[in-house]
Image (cartoon, rainbow, N blue to C red; front, side):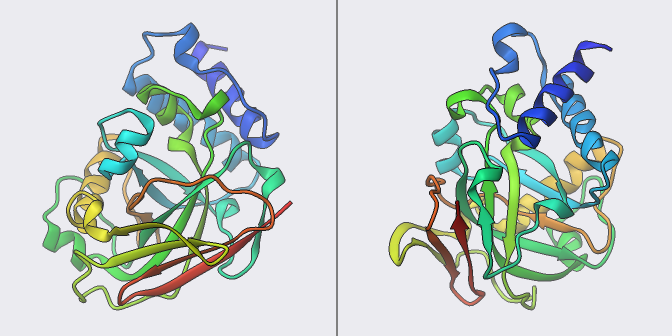
Length: 256
């Protein structure tokens, strides 16, 4: 077994058993971004081997707030599977995670494949619908600390997603107000413009990055555009709700 497969097994086991693990770069400081994406693929392959099904991709580190929160300055991407879906309005089990956080997002539903260097117009033409959404992020690393290579290897901390009602993508969603509430208290306020200035730019970047990995975004895929605000910690018994101007609201609860 080479070191990349070993790293993939470490991260897969950490996610499977909700157990934190030391950063990979602590023992392998030369782990490159390219190496990290290989580890990510190998780790997700373990999950697909257990019967999970890939349903799309997520973009990470797409807002200045997120970059500041985790101390990096590059956009990244990860893979989504059906086991990560949390039905809107239901509860997620806190015990499944190490130290989960939540962030408001915009989700795209694709009606056509998309890959490579594309224009914003071409990207929008491939979109079936958009929705308010939230992502549960849960770094498998101790203390939620990591370098860029660490977080990429760890599937960009992606752990769960909740999607609200789908909307017509031809509406202007460039600068919509966003409110994240926990137990009825406003916790974060932001705008969809926090996603690279326009969420559509995140989809354009996703098409390019996924193609660089020899893959594509397929019809029927979900693409999570990236966090809009900083991501607050979750705790059992919370009710979490995100409202996006013109798109509606999405909510879930946290159970022990």
